[in-house]
Length: 323
Length: 263
Image (cartoon, rainbow over all chains, first blue to last red; front, side, top):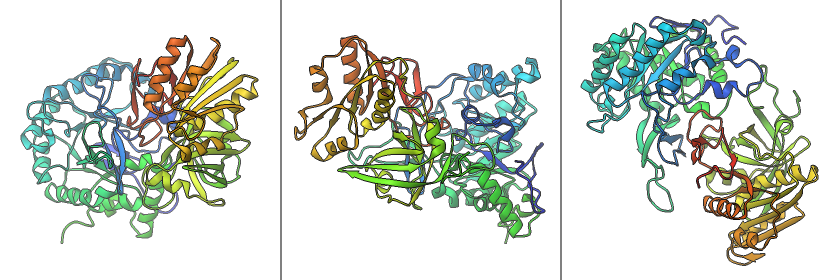
């Protein structure tokens, strides 16, 4: 079932030091490997559809998340306010042997409210990997710092402030030689300022965009629908804004690899992010629409490249940029 | 894998994701619509209490909608739909011969093994999974009594979609059956201590049934509902409070021990 087949298209990409079979990753929090594997007829680890696995964000301490309701559909999209529910890094590490045999590289999504909390997660994982038997740990080859979390002192998103973003990246950089991504929030005026701050502080690459802060009302009560009042908007509705932001960052920081995401539902959507300068593309809400979404999107991407005579994703990269 | 309208994927299937399931029957009961889909791969694996994620036809819908399995007969899967929002409303307008995509069966099931006496307690659209429970128990020779509550006359027409021998109905406006809620029916029932309770309905009903079973010394199960995005355990959008902490309705649920839920 190897995704790369037929035609002359070579789907493989290099994302920093990572050699990926193809450009598609899952967006953190939208795809749970073990949930898929435990009800799959075959060996899901052999058939894992993404080229790298980005699990749901893990934080230093366990979090119970936000009150219900946490999700609902919106025009051409959805809104969610999960609240980074996760078991905390200690229990998360204890669960690693369950999926240690995943072939693909893993990029661990890290959250926190202070630089120290992010650093604690990275330090705990580095310590674990230095001591644990190799067959009990997946191929953790990078970290994605989810800087969309609220800053504990200001309440604003860390990723809305260049200095706060640099603080988080700077706290983690000395702790690891692995690939370090900063996942940027779109809830900013000029995303390139944050992007530059993250790279200057040591990020190897950038992923964007996270969700747009948004609100949905209960039509009956005219009160906020979500238990958290506000949530993050994603899905096709945000794709044009995400494309614009990816293009801005790719233009401002040529040479810095970008993982583009925001409403990718089809192979053409993925190709558009690549044309805007993305090296890899993450699939989020589409995972909720069909279990076979990643396989379909990948096969469509191959067809889209083929149809244009583009031999690889790299050949399409940046076509939308420049004059 | 069967080829009858149930798409055979070229690689192993995830929860029997079934494309283009033909709508074989549509029956309208007031505010509710009963659909029968040809979905052999789902039917083969299904257990009472489980649900499917249904793709809403048309361009305007992103997320699939979770629907309990109402009936499973042969290669047919029955769903009971109440038009609540634009998505479910669209599903009630499906016609025979059209097709929909579904994924399932998903979630936990109502344990039925060894049960000799069952009391099914349903509220509104929450009654839907209890027909499958009744069929399963009746096939095993268990005694089944059902008490369903509906808002009003129009909603109570849903009772016509059920085939359960001992089915008591209450309506809040008193237009059909007992005036009041299912709790008024329960108060009048002579229930043996060996009865297992199966409840599904709005949160206040689950709370009341939980209280009642505690007082009566009965044990049972509740099926909960929640707003879902993925339906398959990935997004953590549908969590509810339980005695074991926050759990996902789609993955650890929808069926939980009645004494475990915190409605």
